[in-house]
Length: 379
Ligand code: ATP
Image 1 (cartoon, helix red, strand yellow):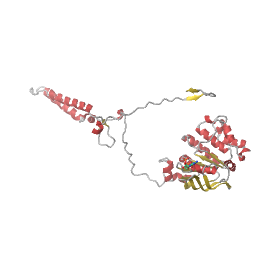
Image 2 (cartoon, helix red, strand yellow):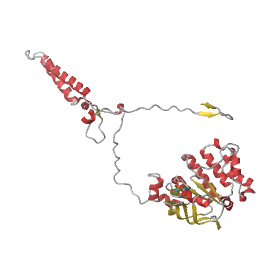
Image 3 (spheres, protein in one colour):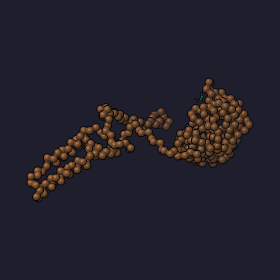
């Protein structure tokens, strides 16, 4: 068992860890969650003997005091670290990277056996053993880093943000692989930002805030904790706790201060465009038409004069309305729930239209170094 009791770390005047106590048993996965700068990496580094700060407190692995040991002796004792950013050797092959992981005394004699165990755990590494690591995907490189740490035959494997930079799919694969590591009886202690996926496979979890461990619980309980959900799991990313009820009224989204809508999507009524009812105009024209027709019927009073002048007047009215609509400031479509279409405010109409600058996409040229030479070739 790895046990950190009352561990404090100072970098100069800055206290990065304050009396933190954490333990990990063999065959369990423990996740450490916390904000940036909370002290998570410091805790892992302190355990591995590579912390640049002043470390105080007790750190033991199966009864061995690690605080007095050099980093390589800590690996000999059975603690391996996969550092943030993996730390693989990119120009070496997969196999060379893995073999380097077996430099510790406890692993040297069993190198072939351990290598076979790692290949069984991650079959892809066996398939790719001759591949140069720099040509591998991020997920595959992370697998190499974990495989290399496993080559030291640890009892406790620690990992600093192993899913950093991996897609959700690759992260899922990574966490499934860590579950396989646990199934071998190895204890896994990891610092993670991906709380959702890491808690899904973890047994227990610690929360670190401002250098202190503020909470410890099973991973299942942590996932149901509203504070953890709010801080680390994001709204809607986990089932709500049983006590949580749906809000009676859905919150109204803040109206956007402005919106640019394609013209084709704007719908304005003809009445709004003309500024008066089209029905009125049509009805007036139609009435004139009826009057004319009635007065032209046989037997109708011959004295009746065809009121073409009135018809012309109505048509002129329609024409004027159309002209006025053309000259009117642009109308905007009404927002949902608003009383109707709104003309631009006079002040806004008076203002010059906003200038929208259009930038050209920058031209990017990629140069590739020629193998074995200093020449560059444009691709
Ligand atoms: P992140 O999630 O961003 O990696 P973290 O929780 O792992 O954050 P740490 O890296 O442990 O945080 O750092 C804890 C605090 O200690 C930070 O304020 C950091 O600036 C400081 N710190 C870490 N390493 C050093 C160092 N070598 N020298 C001085 N200060 C350091």
